[in-house]
Image (cartoon, rainbow, N blue to C red; front, top):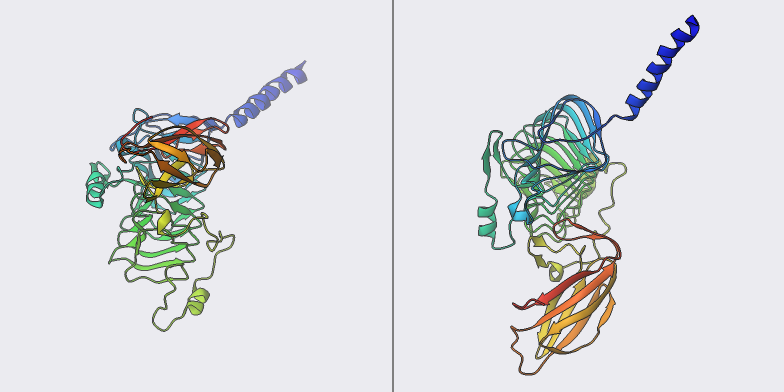
Length: 405
């Protein structure tokens, strides 16, 4: 009996220890402070933040947070990107790694300050605050810095301040007002990311020294792909794709072997610079196009930045007398016309995406009184607000001149 009694508590300890080990995933809650290494339960956490109280805080030293694909979503009482508010995650400390996070719906997705050796990888920081796509002056006014107890915050997917030796790798940072803002006192590397379809700039450096940007797709941003302050120094931008941005703004920095910057620096040619700054291992091949569309004719304005070709839509491309030529873009799938006003004939009634169709305006119809409604059925996709539409689900989209069908 004594042997059995001794064995039984040890058996319970083993069982409970095993159970505890299996339940290490945590749930996120509003205002929680994460100060140790954890993994997060795979779920969607709808947590609002504000400018002084982030949705969650990561604070401490030597921490790894694996979100495992969990979604952190803010501004849950709002529908439009120019209404989003608050800070998603505040980061402070040293040697902090954040990985596999999906974050959307905040004025600032992640605000990291005083965090040396910050590593953010394999995260999706998408669909945060964006101004309505109007004139540049109105956009600047809309996204002016906000006062908070952490200082001024600017609308961005990710803002980093006073943090040395940062590393941003393999992230997707899209559909934000600005993708990444590097404030003062930042050094480190930004490699193998996709920083695309942001309303303003892709990456903004506000006057730092010693940052490398390599093997990134920094495309389709309505402002500069990369914007450097006149105070920036030794910002090495190499092997990036910088196509389909409205502009790029470099000052006194080294930049070479980008598709828009095959420059020679003083007596150094590109070959010599490549020896000093060789390609990194396991890099994405930015020589391959991110999308099959290229040139200004495909810089199509949506309500909140450039159209990303991920959801079905129709664009008027040309008017020739009574002939109206439309382009239909979107994900893989099929479309068909289901209603219309003011058109008498169409070159096609249905088809697959992409497509071009020509419609004839009916005689004596006011050009301002035209509308066309279509239906799409195809693969899973996200709309311009980041909402997921299931595969095979019918989705309506339309062209209209002041009319609604």
